[in-house]
Length: 326
View: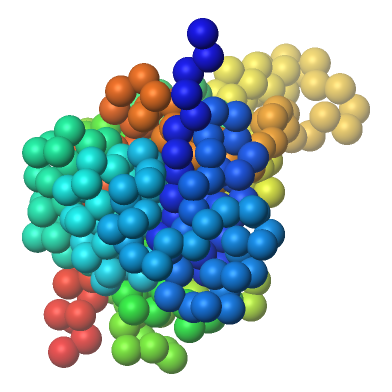
């Protein structure tokens, strides 16, 4: 017997929330029950596009839904999430989990009290690039990340660390799996009241060092990671879902060939392997995982604990930057 469809809703259907609505309307096992949106024009547009209902209050949406995506500005996450959790709704809250650790803890306590799942929208964890990294990253020794974006007013209620860098914080925490020993951060404000450019150096107890850079003052978008470990060097592009790999075994073999004079003509460099990555839409993969977690009553891959840990690091970095600016 087929399982009943999970009734889904979206709070906030702006530039990102509209895609949550689009995907829920097409996912097998999901039924887009409706949306809550304060803009009349936007609500009418999305409801017509995806054939769903506009709820006039969040309470009405909560009553009609099993699972809800919270896609509103970060400083409104807790205000939206807490009453929905009280109604028993499972939530996917876009990253970061909340604007403060106090609010994050309130949300997680409410989730436990109401037996609800909370998944945090760290979308890169569902990028096929991350799947490759999780399989092939062993004991990283040095990691660099770069996340660049053009300036836009959306998201500037928080600084670039909570807006962009937090993606890479979550990725690095998941890959390194070691307590943090030390964090050193710098950043500057350019157009907004919060930092628009930031760099953080994170040293882990394992000895691994991660150097994270983020900017929302770039002319181009870029989302890259490089991982150096004792057996390989990996360079991957999250945006274009591609990358390359250099293996230590190939370097040793190449060195031996040079030593004994067996290197072929034109073979003047170490072999670089293109990484075969099966491309996919990360948000669709993320929402499918969320609904699977709800259906099977299991903890999601990116649950509240990881979301809170990433937020804690991001807030530490932000506080360091603001202290250094005084």
